[in-house]
Image 1 (cartoon, rainbow, N blue to C red):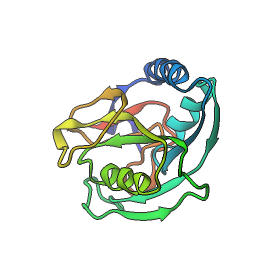
Image 2 (image 1 turned 120 degrees about the horizontal axis):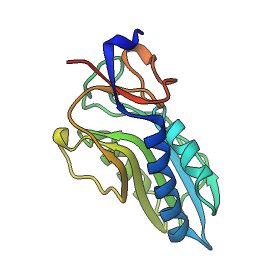
Image 3 (image 1 turned 60 degrees about the horizontal axis):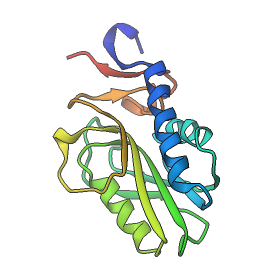
Image 4 (image 1 turned 135 degrees about the vertical axis):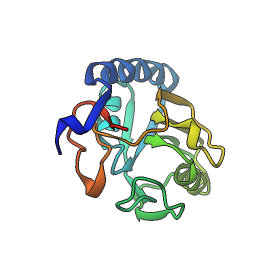
Length: 175
């Protein structure tokens, strides 16, 4: 993938600064509590890894996989669960970590799934919020960046066919 095909939308330094602030805020909320952090795979793994390193609390990590894109640049609207958690969530404080919210369909599905497991609390944090594409309301506790309606990748988010996740910045295809 050639760098002349995209623009840097958010630099890696800016990403880390935003994550440090969110991590400090979540530390204040969850101090003295044991939480389960659930990154949504695959895109949320880098964000979640950096976020938990910036949280000074007792936590366990579970993973949940969901897909609604396939190899497209727009959501198909059909959500498929690709990996489920193994820990019981009933009575637990749960922090859901998502890379990007656009239509909200995937996140709404996952939030409903987790709520059906009776957690003591559920908060959702997202790295990127693309509000212009929202189709359903979702409950987002914290968002690091709001972005315009552009196709983005890098820093865990993939481009066509799963490539581009290893870029340190969040980039957008040139118009």
